[in-house]
Image (tube, rainbow, N blue to C red; front, side, top):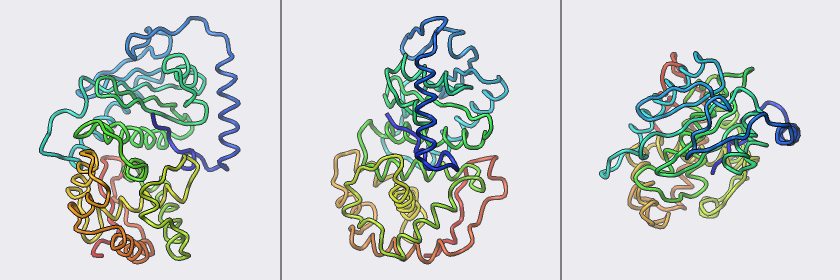
Length: 317
């Protein structure tokens, strides 16, 4: 199960946001319910939580939001799936998951928290904007739709979908935290980047490298970090940016690197096979890339809402 990092969820301080979410979550859990939730797999009794439904080739959406909003999210799901499928490829091929990924979208935070607790027996909804269930047979994405910021809700959906896709791509196997969160943040920033935290991530990473306060990559590669660790999220995002867009990087090599990790290869060996490098040389090249690239103006695609497209970082380094 993954949770959307609140550091990129709100302009307010993390502590205040989490405290407020926690309080609201507790109130929603204690609130009386008119009818108990029932579950058949992940399907909820019609009318209890998600009265509206839309089915697409790869997703089954249930939502309590406006039907027009649901159609917009359904289209985004398929668009993001196609984009991820183009980036992550393997000789194995085949569908990423069996059947369809369930997507639950809630118009209120109270519905979101209650669903998480009653159906998945999880408190993830109390302090997050979304979470996932990664399973080959029953993958699920659960999201609270922010009425005051639809773009952020769209970005959170892309973030959580990346977790599901990456967790099941090629075969279901765990990946290092920096790879999982770095990829999720990387693709989230591809959706409406002008309104994402991309500029903040670039500035933060550049500052970490300039001051020498980044985590050495060999140490970082084995580190697990939580949703409020802004420096680690930024460093993980930047490493994926480099592995895909750097001088020796490409989507194909990043995909190969992930396949090797899922086959149980140590990170050192996967780096050597996919990129012909090791952690010391990767660290030196990554720092050079950060200092040369993140000081340049960010070039955004003109129609950044129409499709998830790569962002030009002034490649050539």
